[in-house]
Image 1 (cartoon, rainbow, N blue to C red):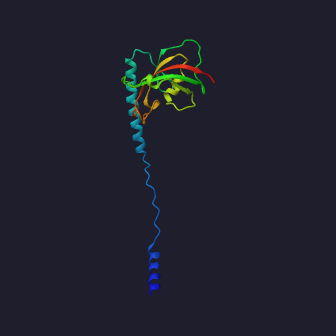
Image 2: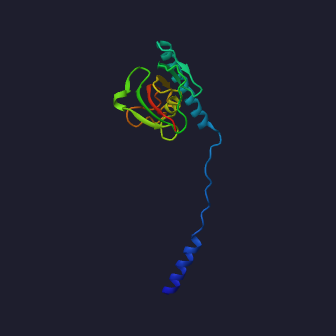
Amino acid sequence: MRYSLLFLLICLLFVSCKPSEARHPISNNSGAFFDASIERNKQLNNREYSLIKTFIQNSEKSFKSTEYGFWYAYNTEIETNSNTPKFGDLVQYTCGLKTLEGQVIYPTKELETQSYYIDQQELFSGLREGLKLMKEGESMTFIFPSQKAYGYYGDDKKIGSNVPLVCDVSLIKLTNN
């Protein structure tokens, strides 16, 4: 009796266990998410460029645009045919960061003199390209839209999400490799 009950129980288990059908993933091919994201980014860029344009118009400095998507003005320009940094060159520079409204984020004193090997170390893209425009002894003010600065994530300290920056940079020393 026990064995027959056990046999019956095992048979019920095998009969009742039916393999489940695989579920297919739900996909959305409409592109609505991407379209909305593109529209948000366009609005953000338009708002930033409008603020930057107003900043430039109200400034006493003569800003020039670059092919890299940011602007610069000389504070101190070296007229001689000096070299500009190339890949692998070591530069020593000072830098101060503030908002378009003039709020100081990082004063030059706080950041001290920085050393950077051109295109071989981490540095936000605007400053990386801006340093390549400078000669030893020059001082420039850069205006970086957020996508050329710290972008959506900020720096996890003082720079928030999508903040365009005004950056005062002095190239102190250039050592060619």
